[in-house]
Image (cartoon, rainbow, N blue to C red; front, side, top):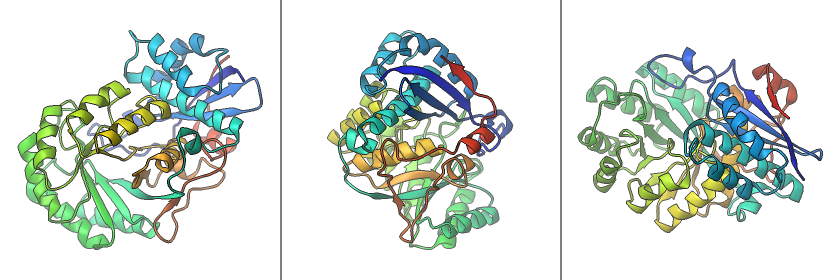
Length: 377
């Protein structure tokens, strides 16, 4: 089975506010779907956490290497793309594009083998996983209302991130955490994401250590991106002293970038994003390396329905998976598939066991969010 085409599908019109200080408008197109076509009737879907213009340029670079390649050898083909773009890739939009292609090729191989991707990755350790609703911090009254809405949708774990946490003063940070805990009670797990990958992040290890001590008083599950993502030495020190588990890694790409973080135990929880880090092929290698270093793996997923589907397949084959991130509310997750994702009465999410990624995109809804495709043939 050979690759005959790729469609680049920038998603617009319903992009969730990412919390950046410059506002929502510049970030309108954050996600791009890829559709890989073959010389059979099978197609595969992938997702990239990168704008359509950048993915279009990256696919233009990659297409001569991809045209006519096997559609059922995702790991070999993806590694060929990495190696062949060594001087222009090794991160950024090129690696993000390879991520989407790799996910799509795994989707095709699963369909060709009539097996879920999780079984091809190594097997199924579980049939369902706890999703945590992923939201932004807000002013206390609005934060409480948002949390109540997420709980009413069935979530039993919630992560709050970015603005205004860490942007004012310590007293206000604690007020936000107090508000959250009093709103959801003790039965709902809470995670905190400082958003240290925001531009010009002002805080260092002392702020992060003191904040972690405060978070421990409220039984926070983990403290994410407390420092800028290039401060590996700061993360090593913070992880050593923090009473709350420290997490990070969403901005890293390629397995080689994760290696020093895992070898130095810079985090307690590593959070690769398969729509950025090189796809499922790279994620599997990163996950096994993390397992060997006794570091918990939680997929990062500020995502689409395809990205979430890939994370669910990952969560089935990871031996010690505990959570999957679920951006909510998000039309690119909730409205793109023919069958919606459903959080059950226990606050759990079933892992699709149909062939490939196990989800089917609704063509009309995709057209709604992607009025113009870019075709490579």
